[in-house]
Image 1 (tube, rainbow, N blue to C red):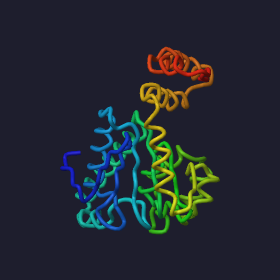
Image 2 (tube, one colour; image 1 turned 180 degrees about the vertical axis):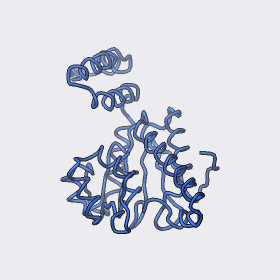
Image 3 (cartoon, rainbow, N blue to C red; image 1 turned 90 degrees about the vertical axis):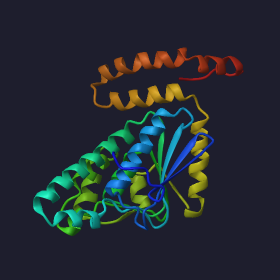
Length: 262
């Protein structure tokens, strides 16, 4: 988190309440330590800026994000002690980014054109929604290299079932967008030439909605999932009450000829 913002790693564009974070830093858009720091800072800034109502993460081209920067890791791994210390810090920083992204009070969308692999798939899974092109693929390839995608599986297993996560993690195969849609890993599959337009239209629609209840509702939705059913309803009820008492909602309902649901 102490590295400066580098525009070549991450470009930012804000339009109509939608902040688009476009990954750069090379064709594979790797999650180097600098990229992790830049993304984390951007996510925290988005949470604090009322003008930023929706966040879109875009890895353009054939690779959405290839995961951790293996060349960077190799430079530090020559010495065992230095390598272990570097990796511990790298994975801690990456985990902190994923938690911040998952818990962001604004809706988040991953726009996946190509392959999301290893920690790149973890990044997509940390978003609320994943819009994928019909050419997109999804992979946890650690077993192919003699390892296992352990930390990426944490985020992925919270987005899809354990069996689907095991299929990704144990096969190491790159699975297609239709598989990902059936597994619940992606929200929508769109023809490649329509993906950007689809994401933009959906994000702008979200950005036009009342941000207060969305922030509170998203937090409550995430929190209640770990609770027993009765406790979950008890936790959600006061938040629901606050939605109906929200002055923006009450004003909009007063202007509408139709009653509004919850």
